[in-house]
Length: 340
Image 1: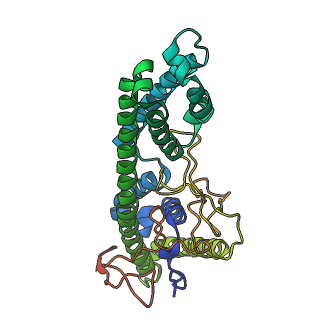
Image 2: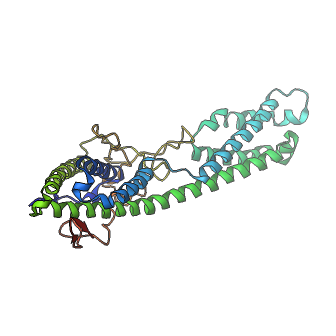
Image 3: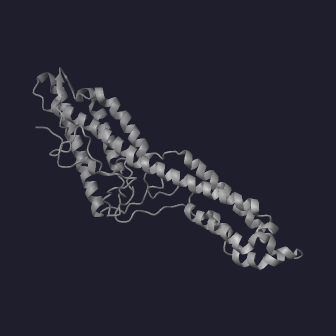
């Protein structure tokens, strides 16, 4: 009997791995002719859902909060530079007694501590530094010094811009966390269900004794052999990742801070890479299989990773505890077609 290998559940794969697997299954369908495999009726749905999963896993998702965050950051950096330029004027003051009175404080406690490179720091570090800068301005200069330098309005604007950045950053992080935990898991389950439908149809035709279906049976048998190779490769890849056989993975995720990827809007805002062995395997035979999602804190186990839910439950319709790659529903045969 020709059947798909049921010794390995693809639900154990992480997001890039399972997406690459579904891509390779699609290639196998088109290479073997969807009509001969009896799956032409669901191929479009499979392709469309797969594209959604690819967009979620491989393509950075845009966010309105990213733009707001970038605008707030640009503004706070500009204001910081303007305030610092005014402080530099105090260093060369000679005639103005009010400026001379705060010259030492400015030179020793402000300019030396808050250098111009502050604006090149990572997002979150810059946020904290600018908060400290505002506190020091109030404490070291006092009301009279702030009034002498005319910094009142700029300090208020800097505080507003910094708070706007904090708000936008938090909103974007929440948005991405929700998307990673909800949307990606849903797309995985929906793709898994479509995959199971394909497998069930192909297995039925592969074992058909009807001579009229001989050509279809041959094509389906070849397809099953191909998918079993894909499953074997995926299993080996998973075992290598979990055992630390591959390079340690660094965060890449879905474009975001909830994973430990470098923020695209700030080249210096590089989040922490995952501890333990991650997925850093790249399949040289398939350019879409770009491993390297977040390294799991438990050595690559990837449990409960918001950017990489590697073990979602199987779909409610189609799960089978004894055979993770087969649906529990029975197929309905109508002529040469099989439906579920």
